[in-house]
Amino acid sequence: LAADEDESETLKRRMTREQVVEYLEFYRDLGVDFVYRRAAPTQSDLPPLAPVGETLDQIRLDIGDCKRCRLSEARNSIVFGSGNEHARLVFVGEGPGADEDEQGLPFVGRAGQLLTQMIDNTAAKEGIPISRADVYICNVVKCRPPENRTPQPDEMQTCGHFLYRQLMTIKPKAICALGATAMKALLNSKEGITRQRGQWQKWHGIPVMVTYHPSYLLRQYNQQARREAWEDLKTLFHFVYD
Ligand code: URA
Image 1 (cartoon, protein in one colour):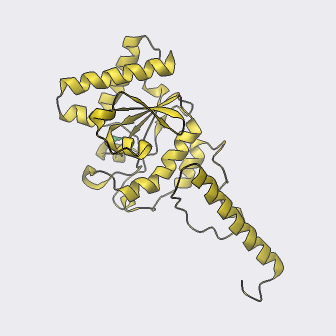
Image 2 (cartoon, protein in one colour; image 1 turned 135 degrees about the vertical axis):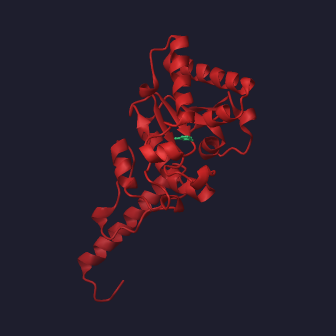
Image 3 (cartoon, protein in one colour; image 1 turned 30 degrees about the vertical axis):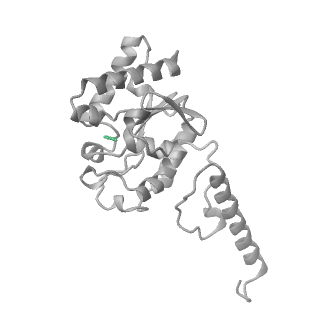
């Protein structure tokens, strides 16, 4: 510390450092090993220590006009998520496509329409009185990757911090990971979707069901994969809503 710094300044600085350490240790213990944040100039700028009691609006505010990774360069909107903040079921996709980037909402393009149909029709067929508006839908990365490429590991890490906070805030009864990117982000799994789908796994104690991404179901007109995805949703819905 500078020799001419007065005592109260020194104290303020020390407290700030201790709080930062506490903050980082808290997240590390929860399994987050990467926290991106600009240095806070004063103690009062520090974010709250724990996400406990945090709302989705607060998380969105913290994202701000994010420039934390290269995906910010070409995006039009940050696609945070949509649906019920108190949902018992959360769907996690990969990242926004062109339509989502334009509208600022997740799963509104062709894949989104298929997902909506799958949710609404499965619920109707199984006699479960919910529709898309009752669940929450978001993505691993909140900005559209150029040419819809797969998000890179550092992009997933940076943005995954916000996904983590969204899921911890909602605390759903179950999560549905749509496709390989969501599966990797939540379960750190290197196995293929075909082997992982349809089985219960856990993310921080919350049951996770992996299934095919709706874009895959659109691309490959694959009757078998479609049937399996519907089966997965049926299992998921009965688990969550029965
Ligand atoms: N695909 C995704 O993974 N997410 C969206 O929001 C739209 C398409």
